Length: 177
Image (cartoon, rainbow, N blue to C red; front, side, top):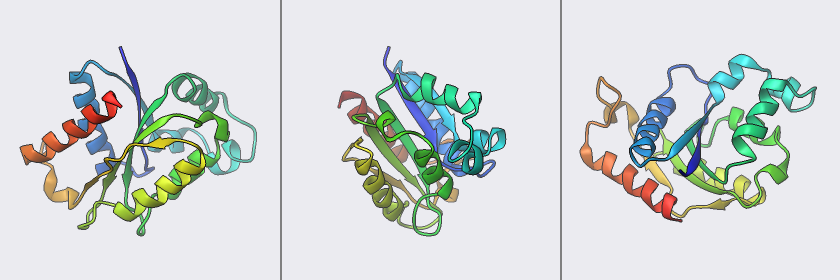
């Protein structure tokens, strides 16, 4: 069974990022893929990334995320909301708190989430530059999901089946890459 690490790239509670990430988790599960979750909200509630993990003493909790979730797995999906025309600072701190060699030669898939019309295209491009610097390979199909508030129903599924299908196709491409 293939493993994929799914990163919810925000520290905002009850976020649309996590709702979209949960849709991706279900799609991956339906494809018999083991999904390993990294939720930056959960991490931010459990440890202080900025003062402890980045510059201070590494916590056992954070080290376990690195050694058990990141190091042994080579495929990562980042679900990234738009924050001020880019990606969240918590994601940058998370990336910076981990030794660059941890990321080398891994494959990444990017999903942008925004309230606006561009689906965080700019943020995904900014993130691509950082991930390329860390020597990750970025899948060409970066999926922007725009106007997210109108995209989800009361059960946090996509209202439009075509949006769900596009996500499934993106995942299939990534798994076959």
